[in-house]
Image (tube, rainbow, N blue to C red):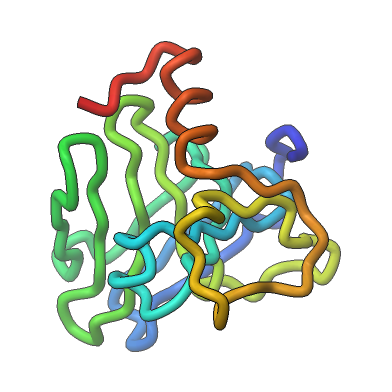
Length: 151
């Protein structure tokens, strides 16, 4: 996974109706795919997201249209209250926000560079991308070793 890079011009994204817009000033060029049960129920398939960003890396407009849902002790998920588009996953212990990749017209050279919770992936969701793959236990162990608690 690449380090964050400054984006000039910023990368702009929006929900389906445009009520919520996002402007990224910095990002890690690549897409992470989560196959966990919660993400699959939330998105209807794998969760394709940009890597977690600190709040100073982006601007959000249309806050009044955002619905937030605490899906666990450590996670918040958000959607547009007008059109229903899923917007982001926030990892509360780190304060990072992972935006849905589909909100943006991403550069062609931003590959899928990691798949996580592959042990929860159903056979129909297998992707052709040859990427590093981590199980849920590996992801949680990595977060704990970084000092984050999952409750």
